[in-house]
Length: 447
Image (cartoon, rainbow, N blue to C red; front, top):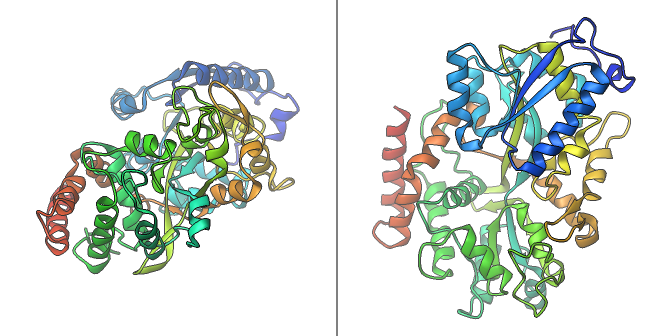
């Protein structure tokens, strides 16, 4: 570990970095919305006041970050720090873009046991951490808890419970039992599929890193998914239709990100609640339950699907100053950082050694919403907030822990899996034929 990384207490007492008062950091960030850039620039100014190190915040669209980083690496002109999605982390570590020693030092300084285990697992690289987890969210099964309670149904935490609820509640067009993803051209379908495959223990790769899709876990999941698509409206469906139907009170269950939390509470005029006469009503939010972990017949323990963003220190960085900045944002500035969008920026660091739950408790008190803002805790009870955060502890993703995040990125980019699954749900392939086709086509991507 780099013993030169100073403790955060120097910052909080206002002392400058030893010998680095004139240092300047360049930070690339995929949080590009103007209001979020303003928050980041204020954090940079606060850090400079405490440390004497100036920080330039450079917003870069997530869709362009990989290309920009590759070009900068080739030119020997990387920024010091990159805030980026998990899909890039392990690949950049393997390419020699990220300094894993500094990232590991930062995690150790902040306290490994203060982080979500799931978030740390996603950035493990050999015996170190490729980057520092920043924030994340867990994909949700969003369901009408009021209707489940009335029908005496169990929460949709398993394939069996979901299928039972579909059978009991499906009554189109007034109520669809589920609104599944069926548009193979949209990433949303791949996200939903990956979640359900993980739930049933279909892990994409075997222990040797070879594609492993022609098996019982895959065929079971495919047959389960057809149950969902059969209970969905016709057509090419993605996140927009699922949200629209749920907001209209016409869907018993959907899969969505937690960015729907404020919309369910009637806090965003662009996405009104149409299930009630009042589009600003919070009634639908109060009637809604959330599940972050689903189990399948071949995986009784179940799993969740997590998205995460991380802080990477590059090999061209001023390591000490970069570490100080990340530690500042993850400590003194953490709640300010999360306040940019609390409904989608969940804390992956629960608190400090002295106050173990300070960040999770503070996050629940942050305002959510667009046209109207209220604290998350004023809409959702504490048990709901706790369950949302617990999802990060069990959240998984295909490939990243095995260093094959690039293969997963190709799955999303090429649409190979979603196209085959759509052929299956349309009745053009059996489950066994679809699994064999997936094995062949995904293996070809790995070659």
